[in-house]
Image (cartoon, rainbow, N blue to C red):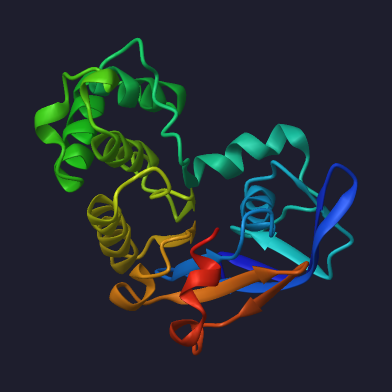
Length: 235
C-alpha cells in the first residue's frame, strides 16, 4: 500500500479541516479528489508530502513511512520518491526546459551529464515535448508548461504522483490531454492522486473518486457520475 490513511484528521492553522479520513492508494491506482473550493482537497494532498500535519491518526502511512511521526530532516527523502505537480507549474523562468529538468536531476544525485541528458530526453519524449527542450518557459503555452511540469515530476521514476489541480488553468481540451497523460503513467504502475474540478473528465478517464464535503472525505467512486455536476463544477 502506497498510502494508508485510517481515521486521519487534517489540520491547518490549528483547525481540523477534514476529520476521520480513510483512504488507501496502491500501485497503479488513479485517484481523483473532488469538492468545492475550501473543502480541504489541497490540504489533504499536503499531508501526503508533509506540508501539513496530521492529528492523532489511527494510521497515517505514505510510502511505508509513518508520516505523522516523520522527522523534518527525513521529509526530503520521502518527497524524492514522489512526483508533485502544482496548478501554477512552478517552473524556473530564468532557464530553459532542459536546464529546469537538469536542475532537479543534479539536486537528486545524478552526477553524469550523459545520463542526465538521456533521462531528460526520455521523459520529454514521453510527454510529447521533446521539441521544446531548448525553449524558455515563457515561450510555452500553459498546456505545454504543464506537460513540462509532469516531465519534471516523473524524472526520478516516482512511486506516486501528487497533482494539485493540474488542469485548473487550462481549457477543457488541454485538460483532457493532461489527464490522459497522467492516466497512461498510472497504467505503467505509478499511482496518481489528483484534485480536480473538471468533473466531466471522470467518465472519460475512470478512477477511484473521493469527495471532500463538510469536513469529511467519502469514497463516491460508484456514484460520482450521478452527482450534480453544476455543484461540483463550482470548485
